[in-house]
Length: 98
Image (tube, rainbow, N blue to C red):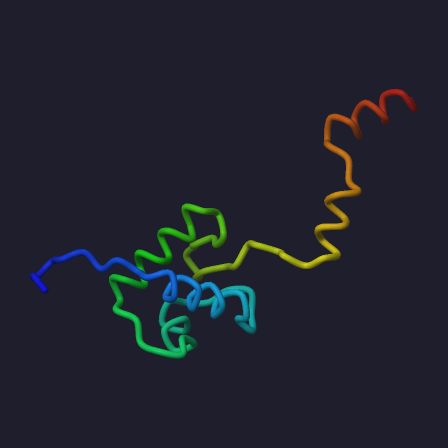
């Protein structure tokens, strides 16, 4: 491999990083903690590509304190969102009430 060559993550690597972030014990994880939580070693540049990808897809938030998993796949959350109303609908109902 040439020096400076791209490190393209595989789907397996992306899923492994997602699982580690989804199952993290706290709400924020540093990159060094993420590396230790992964079941196998991942090249730093490849890991950064995965983090950039997940950040771009709005699955994670990368802040000064670390990385936070944003996706909530719980059935209760899906049900609550399905039964919810939009902000505009709530304002309309409130204005009709007043």
